[in-house]
Length: 420
Image (cartoon, rainbow, N blue to C red; front, side, top):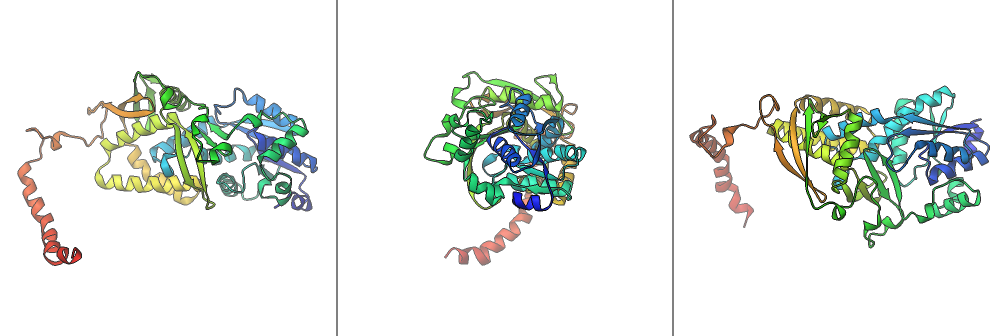
């Protein structure tokens, strides 16, 4: 859909999901110039790259928006981030899906605000070559099918005016729009307190080291202190409740974990050449120190809890959920069903895990493996090499004889033929 088609539908007022960046400023001003009333909505996701979201509000008003509203979304994001951790939902190369999960949270926060102003059309600044356009669209379609979606980057008139970021910068400068100094930025960043995504600009050239990126949630591992630190996380029924013996709300847990892990370079600079949903590859540099600290400690805890068959199911469900999030299907039946299937397992995740952080690395340190501290642990002394436990070595004789029947048949009738 292009802007002329919106006018033909007698649509004169639009709402926008905006971050206050170059795309947001350009689109808001451009739409105003086409005769639209523009209302902008920014969801507070604890963006580490913004000192104050009031600055975003002022930028959007300075770009011609009739209104600019800040909406709190931190608690919903924390709840969703926990589900990502519980599912170990990392996409190709270890990316924790921090941007992918934030999009449906953003839409869910904005749609009620659109209703208050009787705005029936939502726009966003996501490129037509990326994943976010899918995430915004599918979340909107699912939560409120009546809302029209307008994507400037898929409007041929917009693309004619702005083939790329350079033309957008020139437009904003020519119109004295209050953008941040984009000419000095060598890449684009998307931010929330779960993680930062860096891409585009000089990062598209893989012959250039990404070391020019300035971390926003910590330091590069080589700049981290030489002294290690022990971080201890207490989990109760799949929820992290304390970090280093300090009880924290879930939002504060993520933010504190970011600070603890980030200063050691943990989860900073994850490099991925990934397959976008639209069918092209892209390069991303990711920061998610808190997700890495909490996520890895949770995975260590699950090693104590899950039996072999449950572990296989757990890994499969996690892969499904990860792909669903990345592709924009967080709200559909496959995701909700997979999350429901995980719940009996994650409810067993009660325990205390300590990890060692050093120069970008995270290592298992200790676990409090007692009946009181970790009541659902399956780790016992039955596997000990010492004379303890209820497992009798001699009992394995019959077990091996049963297993050996099929192996002998394969050896006698197939193995030789297969290896000639």
